Image (cartoon, rainbow, N blue to C red):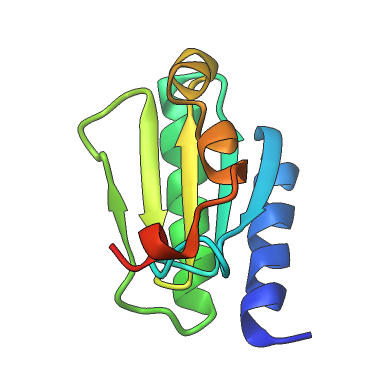
Amino acid sequence: MDKISNLKNKIINTLDANKALDIVTIDLKDKSSIADHMIIASGTSSRHIQALSEQVLEQFKNNGILNCKIEGKESSDWKLIDGIDLIVHIFNPEKRQFYDLEKMWSELIPKEKIMI
């Protein structure tokens, strides 16, 4: 198992152990150059979302990804933790349904548009 897959599993386990809901992983390798994988999960409240994002950030740092950060610090219903090759979105369920990232990233993207 490569380093990114191992880290992805650690992040999923951290989210699961801390009661994140509906954890989904999306392989981005052939869809985008922004990252290799995306993890999407839901939290039950703004405090839960904040706590989950801090735990994920800590996992990244403990695994040698020191220049990662949390985006959406002022938001109470969405956080993005950018771990370079692995991106984690944590939403409240309503915002997650509104943005529907799973649907957007599950669709095949023609190779010409990947380069944009």
